[in-house]
Image (cartoon, rainbow, N blue to C red; front, side, top):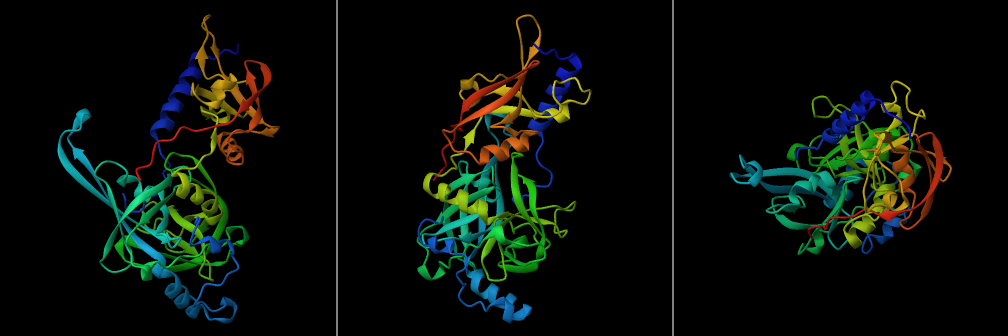
Length: 395
């Protein structure tokens, strides 16, 4: 067994507590602080959006006007309400406290499905919560939660009994063909200002950002188009009026626009949203482990490897436990044992982000070869990937 000093054990414990209590500071919650049917044709990303002239032969001003006129009817204003208790203590008694939040969304099919951010509607999931949607003007329609994925900060809600003439679908584009410097447009509801247009360029690609639970969202689009509280969940568009990203976060000390915004690329939307509509959640494989990066814990160089992920805890019902992987534990003779994941299927795992990237490419039910250090021994253990347990969505 590999022995840990008392100091290292304290470091592991303190680091685990710190990460459990913290959240990603750059995630601004914007004030709240697939389309399997009618939009299936959006898979044809070369399809022109009606009413928009080829940008190569139109002035920039004309392009702005045409994109706004063509797309803004499909951009909605989302308001959420949740009810809590002030001064209720552990038993939940106290005065009711109503909280409201706002955000944006894009109509993605003629069945009334609306794409938005999970953090926009998260407050409305509990008892007494509700969601309303406005298609411009003052008339509001109730909406229900169809599906949520906190890992990618995406969600789908649905409105019913909406006049057909209001259902103007926002077409999906292709985020795999983007270039830095390319013009983009954002439509949303910053500070409650209905259907506001801002423009800019793609400032960067493949940016890593974090979900509310600190999980990696890889490949985000960075833009300098003005994004402010209330824009969350709204579309980031190319000059042809197609959705290439979902505006999700800003990086700003003040909480308002500082020219650094991030959108979740439509490539992730295409993978996640059909599952949200069909089942209410994303069926992705999980190891069922709570891990910490070796590089951050190994300040004194006393761990047997320089990088990898140390398994702190193992879910007794998860994939790792079924395969025999072990978390941090004390043996009968007082020694500390643990497993460190260093590679899977021959692919090096240097940190938790590498583990997340690997699992995102796998299918539920696949068997992978997990290479670990247990004490001073290298081992390879086959692990069958099982889905994570899911909480039911209030539909």
